[in-house]
Structure formats: C-alpha cells, structure tokens
Length: 401
Image (tube, rainbow, N blue to C red; front, side, top):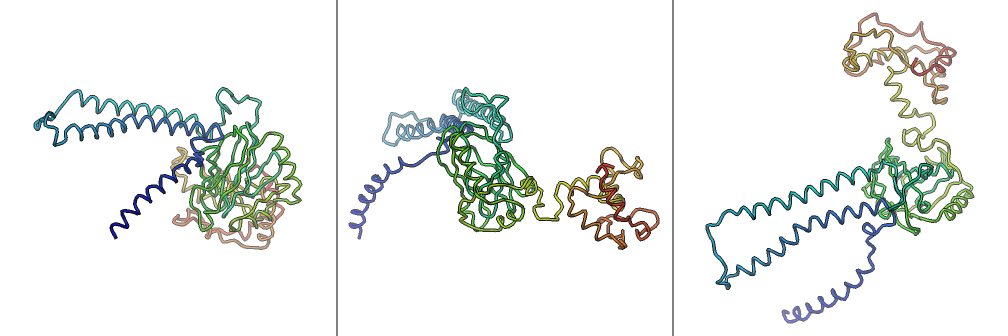
C-alpha cells in the first residue's frame, strides 16, 4: 500500500502543475475594473498591500536567514545568551511600522473622502473632470426578493435584472429595498453599498469601457440569495438610446398594482422591461406606502412631529418634548400647532371622512403608553365632533397651522 501511495503522489503533483495555466483565464475584476471609481478602490488595495509587504517580506526573509546562520552545524555563529537590548534594532522595529501606519492612515483619510459613495463624481477618468453642465444619469434601484428592479426616471422605463448604462456618463444610484437588507454590488463599476427597507442610500459611479458585466447582492437575504444576480451592460450613448427606445416598446406599465405583484418572492426571474413607470413609485417604495390607502412614512413622521392628528394628540407630544428645544415646560402649550387633517393622500382623507360621521370617539384611548393623562376635565368629542365639511376645510390648511 505504501508503494502505491508513493507512486500516486508524483502523479498528483504533476496534475496540479498542469492545472496552474488554467488560472490565467481568471478575471481579477476587482483589480482590473471597467470604471474609474472601482479602479481607484483597486489602487487602494494595491497600495495597502505593498505598504504591508514592506514589513512582511523582510521578516520572512530574515526568518529563513536566521535559521540558516544560527543552525547547530554552524560553529562560527556568534552566541550571546545574555543579550537583551539593542537601540538600533529597537528603532528599526518600531520606526518602520510607525511610518507604514502613518502612510496607511493618510491613504485611508484621502480615499474615504474622495471615494465617498454619496459624493458626486469630480471626474470620469484621470484628467477628465466632470463639467458643471453634465447631468448624471439617475437610476433608482430596488432590491426585491430575490431580484433587482431598476427605474430610469429620465427615460421613463424600468427593468428587472438588467442594468444598462452609457459609457463615460456619471451615474447616480438611489438605492432601497422592499423587505430585508441587501447589498448592491457591481465589482467592475464601484464598491458595494447596502440597500435597506424604509431608507435610501446613494452611489455615484461611472463606466469607462463598454461591455457586459455582472452585478449581485453581497449580503445574504434568504433562500433565493444565490440567484440574486443581474446583467450589467455598458454601451455607447447611441446604443443606450436605442436600448431605451426598445424598452419603451415593451407595452407594459409599472404602476403600484404591477409593483405589488412583482415584489412577491420569486427566484431566477428572467429579464423584464416596462415601457412606463408610475410617477413617484420609488418614493412610495422608500416610504413603505406602495399599497393603496397606506399612509407614507414621511407623512406619518411629519404628523407625529407636529403633535399628531388633531388637538386630541397634543398632550402626548407635550410630555415627550418637555426637555426638548430648551422649552422645559415654560412655554404656552395651549398654542401648540397641530395637524387638523392629512390631505396629501386623498384615499385616506375620504376614508377618514366616511368613518367619523355620527361617531363618538373616546379620547382616553389616544393616551400614549406609559403616560399619565394631563389634568383637567375628562372630555369626549360627542358634542364637538367636526363635521366632514369642517374637516375638509381644515385639510386644506397649511400642515403647520
């Protein structure tokens, strides 16, 4: 058996050596990307690696040299069992790493600010600054389960699992998610940035070469994560216009109803194109109000910030904001502003008017959890319930009034 193993080992080494040339076909896209932003990020990796090799290479070389020089067979080697200090060695050991850390800190500081994904591009390539008249192409990105939605406001089209952009034009991505956190990553274009529900992140990038590339999610998001990939096409300006014109001939519309069907979990979704997109759909997705009749998150936060819907909710906000804005209970809380009705969503306004007619509301249920009810007589709205006409009139008031 040992003879068989000894004979098999050379064969394994030969097979391994024969496979090494195949590695030449690997595409090191991170270090050889097609976009200027990704190229600068790749350069940071190279610079950082070279700086660290200043320490690693000499240490590895000296380790081998020390082992050879002070081997047992070398009787001429100097032997100092009581040696414990050398000023020269201490300076070398501490000064070189300190200089490397200073260099890495400077590179990191500059790169962090110049390559901030929220910062608009100052150049599209070395020596090619972005002119003030150049308008970036906006692409709205939504991470779905488990696919990617791309909306082009300027072209009025949308795609699923296909990102097409013109070469040489600055790109401005607005990124969000429908359910869980994902990570938008096109290695050939720029570094990854997270896509989170109820939030919007940004990324600025550019392609300097035409070609077909791949993007994917770099953050695990469930069962279909492995297939959450999309094609990326960088093309000439003329080719991009032809692509947009072809997308506009798709005879399909991406409205809220179509989006609600699209966001249902599905895997290995083929490329789809939509000829038109409902206005404001991306903002509704970010504010979690794509469903008809659902209040948008920014409306809800604005209402809460101003005291809630009507005078009934003012006492909740008063107690919570006692130590805010330097008030400390000294102001006249009777003059607090509040929102009489939300008129930004006609569907909600109509529903609220229909529900409030001939209905008595117990304001005790509006007291915030854990908050004591303020002093004063217990009141109900049976005699002061506003009529629909009054609410409609109040709904047209300035939200700050």
